[in-house]
Length: 495
Image 1 (cartoon, rainbow, N blue to C red):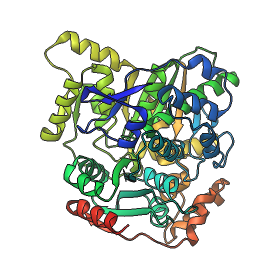
Image 2: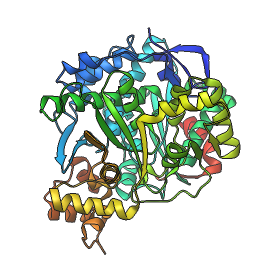
Image 3: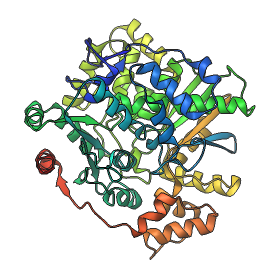
Image 4: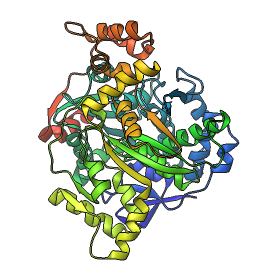
């Protein structure tokens, strides 16, 4: 049975089912797998996405069998197969937004509830689970949709989503505040995503609060990619994209390719790194950031410095200064939980850390391990220009996050094939996309803007977004950053 341990302590090992239920380690670290299985040859023989996903899941969680549930989850996507690959100029663009909420988060979050329920069965866990999630836009709706009991009477899982009320797009916000289900709770906070994410981690770390909730048979878990069960399913679309391009004759089997990933919390690109460790022929991983360039600076200097102003951009899901999943990478490149603990302590107390020190041998090891990554930061102007250019030149429409990745791929232009991950529907960020195309949206409502974008481009509005117009606003709860613990506690007490 595969085991997992904390990035800050490799002595205590837990099963995959316990790692999924806990969400985050008791010491505040993130669970990482003790080993990676090479599954490349087996995946190359598969042409069904669910089969690839199940192979990935079974390599990490052999005790958790959910193959039927995975098949059912992906049958709810609007496209079959759920991953669509299109050519746009020099690059293949992998569209990952044809799920129930029109964002790539659906790939993992459609599966996570089944992983949680099966894990609770295995561990004979009778507690009711409270899923905590911080969102910069897309995770919130995908988690709410996946865990909601709107079609059932099950109440053993509650979900609480925290979002920055002024840090998401209008459509993203509307997706969350209209979510149905008696077990879902949405809280807008007066702050940014980092505030929401820190609040979730603080709630996990509050032992007195957890003891209080345990008296009511409640325990926390997470739907963010800090939960290893959220991260692992994302590995599958890297393998599937590669096998599909081999089948199309775009690449030869065994040929190395690069992936360019729009990156905020570092989970999506870390899944690509894990795919490489599992045998996928990856040449480089381009970490594409918007003007919040903390990751770009890190890969160029080895210094992670969050002491800077968070900028609100047209790609809000990437407006992040604390990229949680980078902690997992730090462990993999250093193989030292002591070093990770030291760096995380410095980040919390001083606001920065440097992975290089006086040990030249250690420094060289780290540099070699990081060679696969290239950091690039795209400006708002370059991103908008990219949306305009790719539509006019190739007839391909993309959102503001995908354009950050596409512009990075163009600017770096690596040898061999580069695959760009497109993470959200352009209609989730329609005002910015219209602006990039030179369309006048003055005086238009959010849904009139969707209609304008569709009519001018000929691209159909996704059903889940069109249906939002007639939905009732259900969730109006707001909280100050300092009041989040009290608000969440009171909310759960009323359930």
